Image (tube, rainbow, N blue to C red; front, side, top):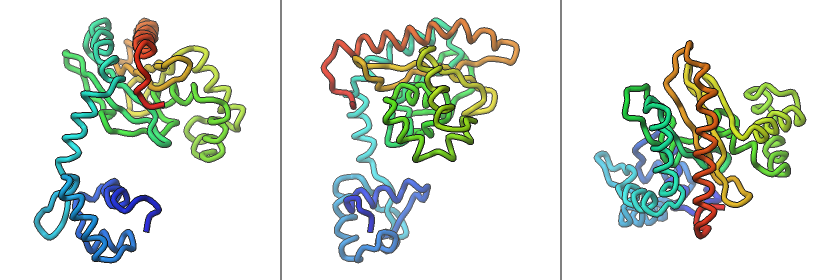
Length: 255
Protein backbone atom coordinates (compact mmCIF):
# COMPACT_ATOMS: atom_id res chain seq x y z
CA UNK A 1 0.00 0.00 0.00
CA UNK A 2 1.16 3.56 -0.67
CA UNK A 3 3.02 5.39 2.08
CA UNK A 4 0.48 8.16 1.69
CA UNK A 5 -2.51 8.32 3.97
CA UNK A 6 -5.02 5.78 2.57
CA UNK A 7 -7.57 8.49 1.73
CA UNK A 8 -5.00 10.39 -0.33
CA UNK A 9 -3.79 7.19 -1.96
CA UNK A 10 -7.35 6.38 -3.06
CA UNK A 11 -7.87 9.82 -4.58
CA UNK A 12 -4.54 9.70 -6.39
CA UNK A 13 -5.68 6.59 -8.27
CA UNK A 14 -7.88 8.88 -10.35
CA UNK A 15 -4.85 10.80 -11.64
CA UNK A 16 -4.08 8.13 -14.24
CA UNK A 17 -7.16 8.99 -16.32
CA UNK A 18 -9.42 6.17 -15.17
CA UNK A 19 -12.71 7.87 -14.13
CA UNK A 20 -14.39 5.04 -12.19
CA UNK A 21 -13.01 2.63 -9.61
CA UNK A 22 -14.74 -0.16 -7.69
CA UNK A 23 -13.91 -0.98 -4.08
CA UNK A 24 -12.35 -4.23 -5.22
CA UNK A 25 -10.12 -2.48 -7.76
CA UNK A 26 -9.07 0.14 -5.21
CA UNK A 27 -8.19 -2.53 -2.68
CA UNK A 28 -6.19 -4.50 -5.24
CA UNK A 29 -4.30 -1.42 -6.47
CA UNK A 30 -3.36 -0.33 -2.95
CA UNK A 31 -2.98 -3.84 -1.49
CA UNK A 32 -5.58 -2.94 1.13
CA UNK A 33 -8.12 -5.32 2.74
CA UNK A 34 -11.61 -5.04 1.31
CA UNK A 35 -13.16 -4.13 4.66
CA UNK A 36 -10.65 -1.31 5.16
CA UNK A 37 -11.19 -0.09 1.61
CA UNK A 38 -14.96 0.03 2.13
CA UNK A 39 -14.49 2.08 5.28
CA UNK A 40 -12.27 4.66 3.58
CA UNK A 41 -14.48 4.87 0.49
CA UNK A 42 -17.55 5.38 2.67
CA UNK A 43 -15.81 8.28 4.42
CA UNK A 44 -14.89 9.89 1.10
CA UNK A 45 -18.46 9.53 -0.13
CA UNK A 46 -19.83 11.14 3.02
CA UNK A 47 -17.42 14.07 2.54
CA UNK A 48 -18.47 14.46 -1.10
CA UNK A 49 -15.08 13.57 -2.56
CA UNK A 50 -16.34 10.34 -4.13
CA UNK A 51 -19.69 9.77 -5.83
CA UNK A 52 -21.34 6.34 -6.32
CA UNK A 53 -22.03 5.56 -9.97
CA UNK A 54 -23.65 2.70 -11.85
CA UNK A 55 -21.81 -0.59 -11.88
CA UNK A 56 -20.81 -0.49 -8.20
CA UNK A 57 -18.12 2.03 -8.98
CA UNK A 58 -17.09 5.42 -7.62
CA UNK A 59 -16.10 8.63 -9.39
CA UNK A 60 -14.72 11.89 -8.06
CA UNK A 61 -17.47 13.84 -6.32
CA UNK A 62 -18.72 17.44 -6.14
CA UNK A 63 -16.80 18.14 -2.94
CA UNK A 64 -13.81 19.10 -5.10
CA UNK A 65 -15.88 21.70 -6.94
CA UNK A 66 -17.01 23.25 -3.67
CA UNK A 67 -13.49 23.53 -2.31
CA UNK A 68 -12.15 24.77 -5.63
CA UNK A 69 -14.59 27.68 -5.41
CA UNK A 70 -13.48 28.40 -1.85
CA UNK A 71 -9.85 28.29 -2.97
CA UNK A 72 -10.49 30.73 -5.83
CA UNK A 73 -12.26 33.14 -3.49
CA UNK A 74 -9.47 33.06 -0.93
CA UNK A 75 -6.38 32.72 -3.10
CA UNK A 76 -4.48 35.95 -2.55
CA UNK A 77 -2.34 35.44 -5.63
CA UNK A 78 -5.37 35.13 -7.92
CA UNK A 79 -7.17 38.09 -6.36
CA UNK A 80 -4.14 40.33 -6.87
CA UNK A 81 -3.22 39.05 -10.33
CA UNK A 82 -6.63 38.87 -12.04
CA UNK A 83 -7.11 42.63 -12.70
CA UNK A 84 -3.49 42.97 -13.83
CA UNK A 85 -3.95 40.05 -16.25
CA UNK A 86 -7.03 41.72 -17.72
CA UNK A 87 -5.16 45.00 -18.02
CA UNK A 88 -2.35 43.24 -19.91
CA UNK A 89 -4.86 41.80 -22.38
CA UNK A 90 -6.29 45.26 -22.97
CA UNK A 91 -2.81 46.60 -23.72
CA UNK A 92 -1.97 44.01 -26.36
CA UNK A 93 -5.36 43.89 -28.10
CA UNK A 94 -7.29 40.99 -26.53
CA UNK A 95 -6.15 38.34 -29.04
CA UNK A 96 -4.33 36.30 -26.41
CA UNK A 97 -4.55 34.31 -23.20
CA UNK A 98 -2.78 35.23 -19.97
CA UNK A 99 -2.02 32.45 -17.52
CA UNK A 100 -0.86 32.48 -13.92
CA UNK A 101 1.24 29.59 -12.65
CA UNK A 102 3.01 28.44 -9.52
CA UNK A 103 5.23 25.54 -8.62
CA UNK A 104 3.42 22.33 -7.65
CA UNK A 105 5.55 19.38 -6.53
CA UNK A 106 8.09 18.90 -9.32
CA UNK A 107 5.90 20.64 -11.91
CA UNK A 108 4.45 24.06 -12.66
CA UNK A 109 0.66 24.30 -12.45
CA UNK A 110 -1.70 26.84 -13.97
CA UNK A 111 -3.85 28.28 -11.16
CA UNK A 112 -5.70 30.97 -13.14
CA UNK A 113 -6.21 31.96 -16.77
CA UNK A 114 -7.88 34.89 -18.50
CA UNK A 115 -8.89 34.83 -22.18
CA UNK A 116 -8.95 37.90 -24.40
CA UNK A 117 -12.30 39.04 -25.75
CA UNK A 118 -11.33 38.82 -29.44
CA UNK A 119 -11.14 35.49 -31.33
CA UNK A 120 -7.95 33.52 -30.82
CA UNK A 121 -7.00 29.85 -30.44
CA UNK A 122 -7.50 28.57 -26.92
CA UNK A 123 -4.55 27.23 -24.99
CA UNK A 124 -4.60 23.82 -23.31
CA UNK A 125 -2.69 25.33 -20.41
CA UNK A 126 -5.73 26.03 -18.20
CA UNK A 127 -6.36 25.93 -14.46
CA UNK A 128 -5.25 22.62 -12.99
CA UNK A 129 -2.95 21.66 -15.86
CA UNK A 130 0.61 20.88 -14.77
CA UNK A 131 3.69 21.14 -16.97
CA UNK A 132 7.18 19.73 -16.43
CA UNK A 133 9.58 22.20 -14.84
CA UNK A 134 11.69 22.19 -18.02
CA UNK A 135 9.06 22.83 -20.69
CA UNK A 136 7.61 26.20 -21.67
CA UNK A 137 8.26 29.81 -20.75
CA UNK A 138 6.30 29.66 -17.50
CA UNK A 139 8.23 26.70 -16.18
CA UNK A 140 11.59 28.12 -17.19
CA UNK A 141 11.05 31.54 -15.63
CA UNK A 142 10.17 29.93 -12.29
CA UNK A 143 12.97 27.38 -12.53
CA UNK A 144 15.49 30.12 -13.34
CA UNK A 145 14.77 31.86 -10.06
CA UNK A 146 15.23 28.88 -7.75
CA UNK A 147 18.28 28.86 -5.45
CA UNK A 148 21.40 27.21 -6.90
CA UNK A 149 21.29 24.45 -4.31
CA UNK A 150 17.72 23.58 -5.34
CA UNK A 151 18.64 23.76 -9.01
CA UNK A 152 21.53 21.35 -8.56
CA UNK A 153 19.20 18.89 -6.84
CA UNK A 154 16.66 19.24 -9.66
CA UNK A 155 19.39 18.72 -12.25
CA UNK A 156 20.82 15.59 -10.65
CA UNK A 157 17.35 14.07 -10.27
CA UNK A 158 16.36 14.78 -13.90
CA UNK A 159 19.65 14.96 -15.77
CA UNK A 160 18.65 12.87 -18.80
CA UNK A 161 15.38 14.75 -19.33
CA UNK A 162 17.01 18.16 -18.86
CA UNK A 163 19.78 17.41 -21.33
CA UNK A 164 17.25 16.27 -23.93
CA UNK A 165 14.58 18.96 -23.47
CA UNK A 166 16.84 21.97 -22.84
CA UNK A 167 19.57 20.73 -25.17
CA UNK A 168 22.35 21.28 -22.66
CA UNK A 169 25.43 19.09 -22.22
CA UNK A 170 25.96 19.31 -18.48
CA UNK A 171 25.20 21.10 -15.21
CA UNK A 172 27.12 24.20 -16.32
CA UNK A 173 25.09 24.49 -19.51
CA UNK A 174 21.87 24.10 -17.55
CA UNK A 175 22.89 26.73 -15.01
CA UNK A 176 24.09 29.16 -17.70
CA UNK A 177 20.83 28.91 -19.66
CA UNK A 178 18.78 29.66 -16.58
CA UNK A 179 21.13 32.44 -15.51
CA UNK A 180 20.50 34.19 -18.83
CA UNK A 181 16.73 33.98 -18.25
CA UNK A 182 17.09 35.32 -14.72
CA UNK A 183 19.22 38.25 -15.87
CA UNK A 184 16.83 39.10 -18.72
CA UNK A 185 13.84 39.04 -16.39
CA UNK A 186 11.70 36.97 -18.74
CA UNK A 187 11.54 33.68 -20.68
CA UNK A 188 10.41 33.36 -24.28
CA UNK A 189 9.58 30.10 -26.05
CA UNK A 190 8.22 29.34 -29.52
CA UNK A 191 6.29 26.13 -30.31
CA UNK A 192 7.64 24.46 -27.19
CA UNK A 193 4.31 23.63 -25.53
CA UNK A 194 2.09 23.80 -28.63
CA UNK A 195 3.10 24.18 -32.27
CA UNK A 196 2.96 27.77 -33.48
CA UNK A 197 2.28 29.22 -30.03
CA UNK A 198 4.58 31.68 -28.31
CA UNK A 199 4.89 31.91 -24.55
CA UNK A 200 6.29 35.02 -22.88
CA UNK A 201 6.67 34.76 -19.10
CA UNK A 202 7.97 36.91 -16.25
CA UNK A 203 8.49 35.94 -12.59
CA UNK A 204 6.25 37.11 -9.75
CA UNK A 205 7.91 37.53 -6.39
CA UNK A 206 7.03 38.28 -2.82
CA UNK A 207 9.98 40.02 -1.28
CA UNK A 208 13.06 38.20 -2.54
CA UNK A 209 11.30 34.93 -3.31
CA UNK A 210 9.76 34.05 -6.67
CA UNK A 211 6.36 32.48 -5.99
CA UNK A 212 4.71 32.37 -9.42
CA UNK A 213 4.89 33.39 -13.04
CA UNK A 214 2.64 35.30 -15.44
CA UNK A 215 2.64 34.26 -19.09
CA UNK A 216 1.22 35.88 -22.20
CA UNK A 217 0.23 33.52 -25.02
CA UNK A 218 -0.57 35.84 -27.94
CA UNK A 219 -2.10 35.08 -31.32
CA UNK A 220 0.69 35.78 -33.81
CA UNK A 221 1.22 34.84 -37.41
CA UNK A 222 4.70 33.99 -38.60
CA UNK A 223 4.96 37.49 -40.07
CA UNK A 224 4.05 39.05 -36.72
CA UNK A 225 6.86 37.54 -34.64
CA UNK A 226 8.55 40.95 -34.41
CA UNK A 227 5.65 42.17 -32.27
CA UNK A 228 6.86 40.00 -29.41
CA UNK A 229 9.59 42.52 -28.58
CA UNK A 230 6.89 45.11 -27.86
CA UNK A 231 5.16 42.77 -25.44
CA UNK A 232 8.21 41.98 -23.32
CA UNK A 233 8.20 45.20 -21.22
CA UNK A 234 4.42 44.91 -20.78
CA UNK A 235 4.66 41.38 -19.34
CA UNK A 236 7.60 42.34 -17.11
CA UNK A 237 5.65 45.38 -15.86
CA UNK A 238 2.58 43.24 -15.14
CA UNK A 239 4.68 40.81 -13.11
CA UNK A 240 6.26 43.69 -11.20
CA UNK A 241 2.84 45.19 -10.43
CA UNK A 242 1.57 41.88 -9.04
CA UNK A 243 4.79 41.43 -7.05
CA UNK A 244 4.48 44.89 -5.53
CA UNK A 245 0.89 44.25 -4.44
CA UNK A 246 1.77 40.86 -2.96
CA UNK A 247 4.65 42.30 -0.99
CA UNK A 248 2.29 44.74 0.73
CA UNK A 249 -0.03 42.01 1.99
CA UNK A 250 0.17 39.41 4.72
CA UNK A 251 2.14 36.33 3.54
CA UNK A 252 -0.72 33.87 3.17
CA UNK A 253 0.31 32.51 -0.24
CA UNK A 254 2.41 29.36 -0.39
CA UNK A 255 6.09 29.73 0.39
